[in-house]
Length: 316
Image (cartoon, rainbow, N blue to C red; front, side):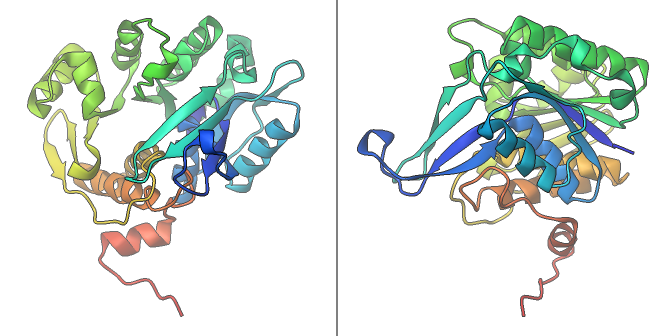
């Protein structure tokens, strides 16, 4: 059985071999990147069956994305191959001081043509968690209606809805999508957001105020507020816990938030206590920063348990 299902776009990600800017002709390696598939892969690594719904181009880029995600163990049986549209692309710039910026080329990509008819109600209904992000509904009107339909199916089946706002201002193109993000938060059971996103949505950086606002105005059951190298807060309607940052050697922070989501959601699927779920999120997020790719540093279940229990990993 698929325990977690997610819907969204995965792109071809070109990652620089050096910290030189694109304009200087740096050499790039090709990987995959997508907030939803990142989370699915992270949860799969931690011992749970996951599935991913999307549209992919029929060209070599589409086949590469499909092969890479399938190789991670994620179920891709609900992928639609689009013969008319291309895959989305992104190029990373990593500066000498370690800051990462991104250029997107994803307009009219195959995924932007997702349609509610692409969804299988039975496929979503079997899952314990449907994970969505705020990236997909702003890609196109049909993506928005597709995610609304997915949430409707999940609600009818008592499948928990997990949501990460994943605000990408470069994709907003001057339009304010705050109301769209808040609409999906109101539909959700689990909300996993960054502190900077919370300020955008609730005009406060005070974690207590954010918790009070979310829990008083929605039916959200679990909330995580991620603050990168400063740690995170996790809460339900009874308790909250600060999750200290795990020490790491960061190379690229992109994908860390998705990894946190994977760790936290895996803990929930394992029926672990809230604080341990938060610790799993923090560990996964820290591990993710130690590679240039989005998913290459994600821990497996053995690594996670060793770190949780302060056990050394045998190397030889």
